[in-house]
Length: 195
Image (cartoon, rainbow, N blue to C red):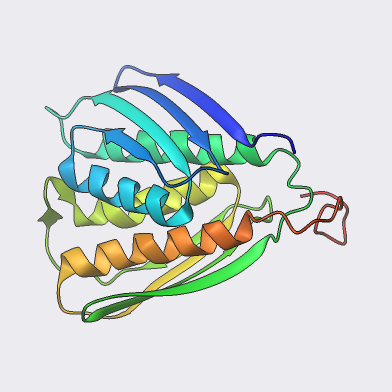
């Protein structure tokens, strides 16, 4: 089987990112973005998707967290897109529910090649551990756009914003894990013949 791996290097005036991704890994993650809660979310994503992920980012955190959060998501999405190649022989569609104590999230993905994201996390705090809550959803949206996938993510209940955000990323991880599975066919899973 062809390895499904990708490396991305992204350098702008706002961030410098080095990332490697293996879709057929074991969930090993080394993530260092300078934003503790973003590291936590991306580590949980890799762990539960069983992706091996190495991500290092130096960003303009003296400005705020936006550029770092967005660019890490764009780099991860680009790596996912590249690692999937023509998306031949994958499950393509998947959904997952994930609980975390009182919180429950539902995520549905389609590795369609058509980027779209509807994300409703219902976060109420301004920030969690240095990551503004508006950027939690923005990370998911940016990941969906860059990886060319359709994403619907909703937190169905929960009182604790840390739990709400984390369970959304865990549900995303589980859905991605199922969607990228090789199904044994050699076909592109589309009536169009291309994704």
